[in-house]
Image (cartoon, rainbow, N blue to C red; front, top):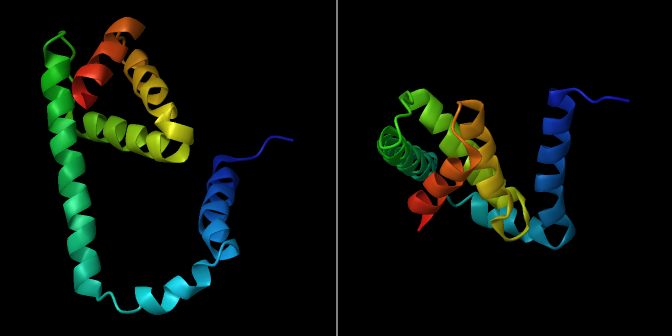
Length: 121
């Protein structure tokens, strides 16, 4: 049976939110209530700015090999790579996701991995 993308996302979100509660994360909720909405907005804004700066760096590196990426394309690549790093053991999915996404834009796999290495290190 083939699951739809929405069902997979819901399953991933449920597991991501449920596992911390299984290991004692219920004590976190009273602490989380102490964070104001303004502080949360500032934190999310900082994450968004960081992603956009990383996307700009990716665009700069990609232009060096003749690849023209829009800011939206670069931002989507950066966000997907970051989530792949966080969702896989030891971040092993990051280079694979990055190379695969750039491969879809016509970049050869060795060049895509070289871009990842230059971007990360």
